[in-house]
Length: 130
Image (cartoon, rainbow, N blue to C red):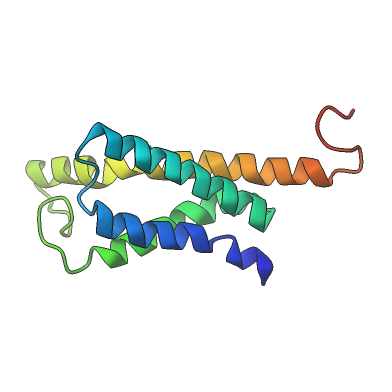
């Protein structure tokens, strides 16, 4: 039960990001904020779950929550992808940018969080023990 709670920050961050920037970051400070928050959420997910599954599940929970949050919105970057050149470009710009700015940093943060939690539980004593 406690391990499943570790994915709650990713779910909440997905909803918040879906409301805050449903079409993606507009300004560079938005992109940096999304990146940093995603790393922190990933580290939290990895440390709380203490499992490498957080590397996959945290970004999945973020994506599902974000997509459900965007359901009622209209526009080329939040609508259902269209099989045209412009639709492909909108998919890459709208959702592809979120993959680079949110999902990859979240996965890296989850890997770090899970790994640091595993090292601290190791019988050798953690950091630097051989």
